[in-house]
Length: 549
Image (cartoon, rainbow, N blue to C red; front, side, top):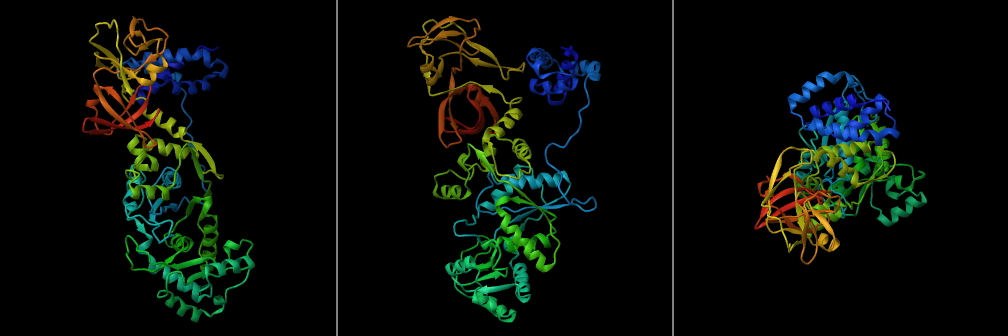
């Protein structure tokens, strides 16, 4: 095996100078540029660990001095685009224009954030323009607009550091524009007002039969259009004329406008006739100058409708890219269910961890950088895919691990009855395994978790950073030697803690009193439990939100 000791030290120094500390996981991949073989990884790892430990013990001045002597051992990195493939029809002369189109029926959650972020990442990649268009036309009775959602959407995009053009565009402000183009379609003989019942129309579409209402002239259709603003809800719709022999019955004479008397959060009852998604977007994608539409595979039909309308008006087609949906393994996401549970009070709000909203992820300690990297890693998947939630946690863990202080925590604490306790009043414990900084932990009554006590009863274990004991109804100190035996967390002079878990349940326990110095929203690691974010103090309890292991 080639001697790589100087290269290892050089990369360790470079890594520490760049990120504040050296990381074993970031040194190993670089060595393959120097001929390292996979079969040699096991042999080289101790050298990397030793080098990282040495470098992390240096001062900044010492690192710079040492790196100056070894910088020639570092190969320059090839700069590559991370994962997003190039898009078609991106002009060098004119900036591309993308759009995000959230429907305000609830907070943005991890599932639908993917499409919005992909648009934002491409806008950043090409230095393009990104529009935020709130798609707040009246939807179905099952999918209703939630007034609170408008601000929740803005806050989510702010947290994710998504930069979009101002002002925000609201579709509910653009009804007169949609009416204008509806009338143009009618005058061109391309749309008609239909009074057929849903059942009758469904049967006619299946058989390829035209509605009798289709045959009236554009002049009569215009009068029927004016009457549509006065008819009862559900009595009439405006349909686009397509071929009733189209191979897909769902494409035959689709609805462009319908009547709804539901009150709109922004417009009240000012409007009763509302456009379909494909009608409003066919108009807006043209008028707003959208060059690239990135949307899910679930909107294939809507895209075909838009193209049909663009062709009627002889408008240039934007580039349309469909991506597969993502199913996040271990996560149940439903905006309609969350809306119901928030309104009923079952969930504490839109930041309840069970909603999986961006607000809830932020409150748990999931960073915006982790979410962005998670989405970028998925990229433009053509097929529907399943991604484990652990992928996001792994990214976030890498971002938190270097800076999150460690504290001891035990759930469902049991006080130990120690027969022969050593007279140790305090111990100094590293705030992080790779830091020289210490925290002082007072030693008095000792508590361990009930689970650990039951699991390791009558066995010799080591109380982390303290001494070894044999657990039992009466426990006994056996030695202070740091043996290779099971290590247990313990707390002495602790404070009561509640940890809210992702499933909505809470874990109660004791944490060392050093947590009383934490600032709200600070993320720390409860050793052997997981990363948690401090949510403040209520009564005599310190509240935390669980992020992940």
